[in-house]
Image (cartoon, rainbow, N blue to C red; front, top):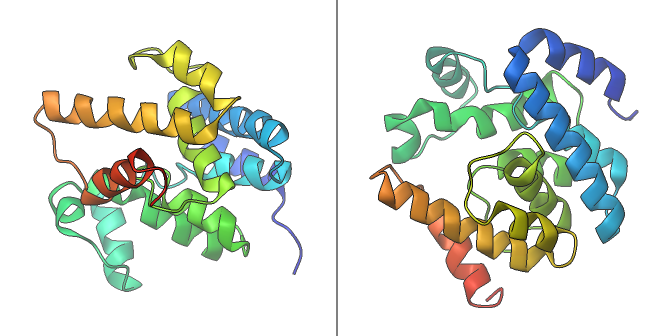
Length: 192
């Protein structure tokens, strides 16, 4: 099976995403490639996962729900209340069905880029962190420290960013997906 064509994916994302989301996507893809170089992961897979991580972000909530219902993609309670959270699940589905991605690590990196999960692969960590630290991000607390750590120790950077994410969600009284909490607990306990 031939690898997905990165140039075609990029052109498709430029058409399907609004300008701001496309700029973010480029930032994630290139940050992911840099992290992959640093941590010995596959650079092309990092670029593909980064380029596709938000491929379902500009779909309407109705369209995301419709795709989940049509293709039997399970929606948890948080996703049913907040369908915008489905973009990762729908994005991983589209990566397979529309863009020809067959690499399970790339698919999982797209699938888990919002919540993370216990026991993530190096690529999954890279995409999660690249989404958090890409150059267009400005608001997150401890961002400079997390960016530096991401190139030194993925697990340390991941834990710092997860902690900041949970604090932000709690402070704003927003819905916290249980997987984000499980991911944080897992890495806080040293990956156990």
